[in-house]
Image (tube, rainbow, N blue to C red; front, side, top):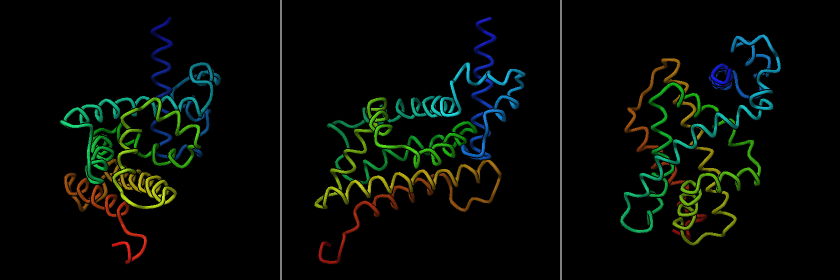
Length: 210
């Protein structure tokens, strides 16, 4: 009985991930997920996840935990306390996410995460910081490495480049999934993304600050 419930839960999670990525989170109804998973009981999803938001959270947690593990490995490669330059900090954000492009499930996650990052309020962001400490540490390092800019400007830049990063990864993930033409190799794409984010973070507010 327990194995049957686990199987049903995993199937619901798989179908939800597929529909969220292809149709969009807001366009996917609970009934769509239940029907896609082959369940006759319309309350199956609510039984396992509580709501559509609950299954979305489960999908995000599944992948973000893996990204956290990978970023921890990258952190351990530093002999000191961590990266010292903006570019190094950006690489710690970008590299584990770029690696998700290698799998279909990872590509779906990137498309879902790009939609979700705009939905997070401050309390949810604070919760993410507690759940994924290397992500929070990297974001702090990125902000500190920018230099002499007003704190509000630094916060706005960090938030904006995270959204830019997720949008670019989502577009590439969809192109890979649909077989669309992709002009940049995986290596060049990652290097270009890191360079763009670094440039956006470090751009002076005015010529006088150069």
